[in-house]
Length: 200
Image (cartoon, rainbow, N blue to C red; front, top):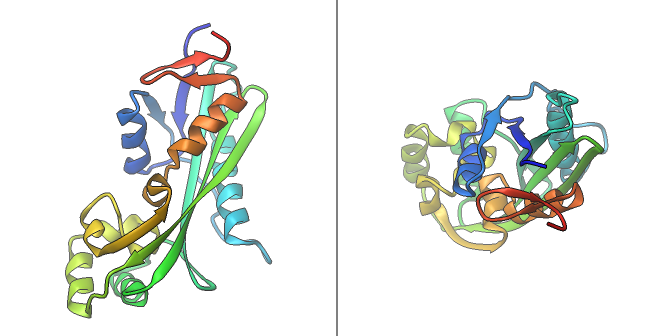
């Protein structure tokens, strides 16, 4: 049995890049799903449901294909921060997070021939204290506009971070450890650059 074909049901360049860094080539097939919250849905349930919906929406039915879906949100107290609608909202989000801790949740799902498995990674991030001029300057780079919470820890946004507790890759948007666990649940082992059937 050869390696399965990997399909990434996401337009996120960060997720695609992480898979490349792991030595795994994934076809990109962005999913189009409704990302609105369901009434009473927790942030954890939301990111896991959306990750599953994305993986399932582009599933091919081909037994040789594994589809990966993901979704990330930033949780500030009882507020959930998705991607900013515009530059003003991005600045407002960043100013609200300045000098404080927030949670990042990333759902990940893997759709294989036997169905879908999923998990949620989480981390706590503390931002250093910064002023509005810093927030405006960062937003002007354009980097925050397609990211939950209006920052990218793996890019220039890393300069805003004072401390992180938990899984760094959850904050990037692709919890690598959870992905490897899901692979094992569908019968594949990550062999550093390739996938092998379990038990080989």
